[in-house]
Image (tube, rainbow, N blue to C red; front, side, top):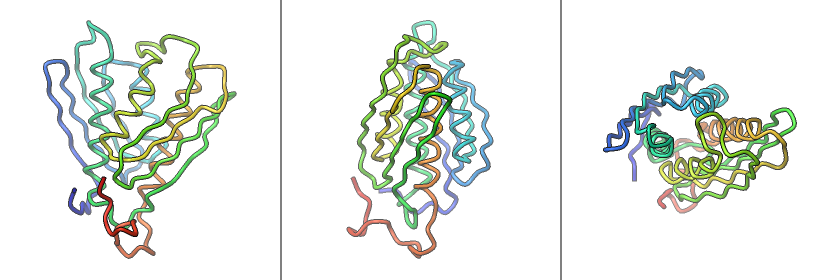
Length: 203
């Protein structure tokens, strides 16, 4: 169990034979982002994620993109999940659960999160194209799952409808950002207590 983290920020480094990732997250930020993963579409999604969640997010990642984007994208999202887990600490005082509907032109996404310490992910998001720039659409669900597992949160994400895959994914990342922003906010009525009737948010 993480200890209380009053600064609500984290710095994560992950180095493997496949990737090198350095990530800094400030939950109570202003939406500033500096994202460099080598995968243009992922950079775009994480930049708007930071902006809509009002998180300050810096990511520098290099990886074996000569093979494909899988390892780099996956490890970036693992680090993002770990950063939320570390920054939230024992999750004292937070709202804990929240959801957000976000439209993007003809597409509509809905994301629900529970920061209660239990990792689970359900994604219902059909795509019609194979790739969005350098990112395969078959990875989208896996990336959301990687964030959820390492942030120790329940994440349910769905695209209710839409035609354009870029719009669908953008709506998902914006909805995730807004749901996480709301769920991670400190509720003064909790008086700094852990948001669970069990008295702990263990897995």
